[in-house]
Length: 303
Ligand SMILES: Nc1ncnc2c1ncn2[C@@H]1O[C@H](COP(=O)(O)OP(=O)(O)OP(=O)(O)O)[C@@H](O)[C@H]1O
Ligand SMILES: [Mg+2]
Image (cartoon, rainbow, N blue to C red; front, side):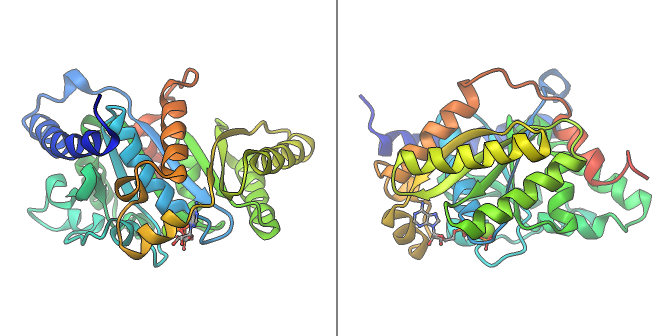
């Protein structure tokens, strides 16, 4: 039987080729046939520093191990961004797509461990003030992502700022990360409240990070579920939990994803379980997909 490390190595080799191949096909105009709807999942939190970026990167790897083609959009203005967690360096940013001669393939970064990502997604905030022509150009170039990815993960950064809200309202699904800390819970509730007020199709799930046992996660989820039901009339499920694990801290120090560095660690197992449940656990109907996401982000439906 293949062990985790072998599967991961194979994934890295396969994925880079696979994404490039899909991109070539897309650019060659053969994309229509596989223009399936792409799941867009925004990963957010109320409080900063609760583990969004680590979840995003490691979940991308875990979903990749399940055969999904994953694209990560780094829309986090914070310090610990996708580049840092991956130990990679991006040459281009999303807004470089406005430069002449820069195509989607130039801003797509094939990072280590098979993670493909676009840096500088937070620049989309500026894009809303751009001319219609520029917004259309950006949207047209970015629409190719729909053909190369089955799932897009957007690391949104924390809080209730405009750009974060735009991303979570435009995505079909939201993963709201919290820790069991009271301040993180209060801030998570603030996001739930704002989301319940503005989201048309509500699909928000909790991820409880840094728990010491399953019971702690259950308590957090049940507290937030009860409050949500009582005050917001909004159901909220749990996508999973991640144990407090010193391997995460060690991996961050080494600028390597923990799933790559310690595939058998408890945190890695939790993220793998979450990936499986996201893919196989229940029917997920993609309502807006990548195109709908872009349309909303670039304000075409709202202006
Ligand atoms: N499961 C875990 N076990 C132990 N430490 C963890 C765990 N998850 C996260 N951490 C610690 O928390 C730190 C912050 O994680 P991360 O950068 O992913 O958070 P973030 O929510 O993206 O932060 P920001 O809001 O600044 O973008 C990590 O560097 C790591 O030290
Ligand atoms: Mg972050």
